[in-house]
Length: 246
Image 1 (cartoon, rainbow, N blue to C red):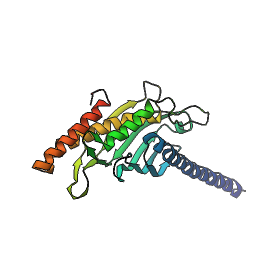
Image 2 (cartoon, rainbow, N blue to C red):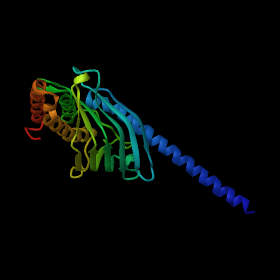
Image 3 (tube, one colour):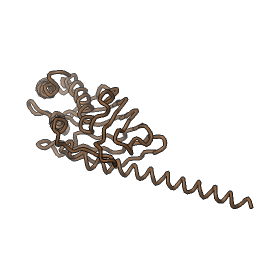
Image 4 (cartoon, rainbow, N blue to C red):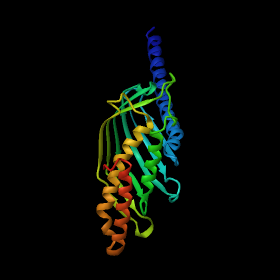
């Protein structure tokens, strides 16, 4: 007589486990597909997310292997690569149109900074994002209810980053200052994916420009001066995107 209740409990637990694993896989698949579909339309470059795991109960998870290619006119390399992105969000908010993310932590990201007179690959990438944020007809992700998805990120941290200035044997690898942002989209009641990407990249770009400008002299006396001048001009061009502000 006791075996039947025990079997029933075991069956229920097994069913819950299957549902949980299926939901976790399903959410990861949604995130990966969404990034790989919407990303290229936002940046106008190659965007590939290798994988994503997200717990539907805790709301925490990891995005793995995010690669963003260079804009048109630059090398065939990548603008940046993020190996692991830790995400903690309000459980099940991903199923609605207002996704609340408690924190995003990116450790040891890798950026490549290419400059040319008064332009740079990172600056052009930022311009592409700026065009989308200023366009009412830009691509938008929508929830199941048909409403545009809005994001709220309460804390964003990028730390331990490095930026490669130049290419080939003469390339210089530099440490990046950390980037910390709070309450992105909170006062607005949520912002679009393009607005979120632009807000993050604006601060990251400032960190990249600052790191390269301070260390450009390490390349060498003559080439260092030329590199510093190129970096400064490219940095000034990027600052103009923000109305002259850093």
